[in-house]
Amino acid sequence: MNKNQLKRLPLAIIFGATLLSLQACEDASASIDKEAKQEEVIKVPVEAENIVRSNIANYYAANAILESTAEADVISKVQGLVEQVYVEEGDYVKEGQLLAKLDDTRYQLVLQQRQAELEQVQSELKRLNTAKNKTFVSADTLEKLQWQFQSLQAATDIAKLDVSETKIVAPITGYISNRYVKKGNLVHQYQHQNLFHIVSQKALEGVIYLPEGRLPEVQHKQPVELSLPAIGNKTYTAHIDRINPVIDSNNGTFKVVFRVDNTDGNLRPGMFAEVNIQLGLHKDTLIAPSRAVISLDNTNYVYQIIDGKAVKTEITTGFRNNGLVEVVNGLDDNASLIVAGHNNLKNESEITIVAVQQ
Image (cartoon, rainbow, N blue to C red):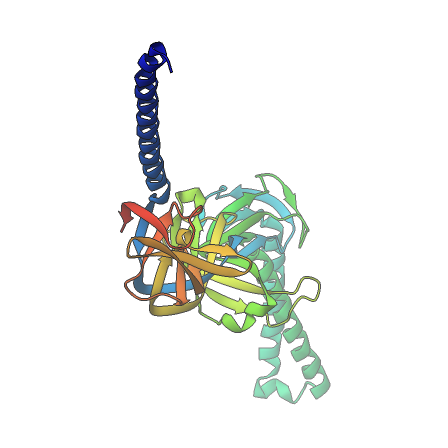
């Protein structure tokens, strides 16, 4: 080995040592970065909510159109010209209130004629029934006269009825929803064309159809909750008024009629109502938020937080209502559940709680 080679040898050694040192530093730095990244992936941020004990009800939801419990078409029982109309559409009327009046001139004359004939026969009967005249009148003649009196009495009553029926009155209490008649119209006896239509709004009802499996769960007077979108989703409490026990074979449902009080007058026939029927109530039971429950292959499970880890736990659920679910089995009273960030979790993943919902 010559002198030049000897001089270059220390330089090569120093250069190689430097490269090894740099490589070691890079490996150490990469190892630290890798561990930091692994730490970030493992610590999954989640939101949690504690399970509570409370009451929860089971509801059946449906839709219905409110209808009047009582309505009537008003017709004329006699023929005549309309002399006066006293009400308009939207007016509130009471039972027996005068709505319109027909010309009664002809009926008054007929009544006067019948009354005159009746008085004549009545006077004759009175004369013949005296003790002085009984011996001069046969029993047959007296009997015929009595039958004539009774016939004229009935004819007079009919004439009085015709006169009274020229006054068109309200058969029920309610609102005039339609007025079909005008002053001067000729109306006929018991004609098909109605004069008025009256709707009672003191109480309203609605019809819904439930699956046949729900028949044992509904009862008379059972409470029904109504929500009316037309008046700002205001809620009313109704009750079941009638239950049809016959199942419709075409669709497997049965008819239920509910009734709601409307003394405040805010409800109107024809309004759309969202209906919820309470079919059951469980008291002092474990309640969890619905968004904490994950359903997969007909199995329900949640992630509960135990020692900073997300532990996958299978549960049995019961009633569901308004974003809450009843937990029948699988959890204790002090369980804390993950409600957000759990979709990509694995069992016993490390977590970081960023928020706790109350």
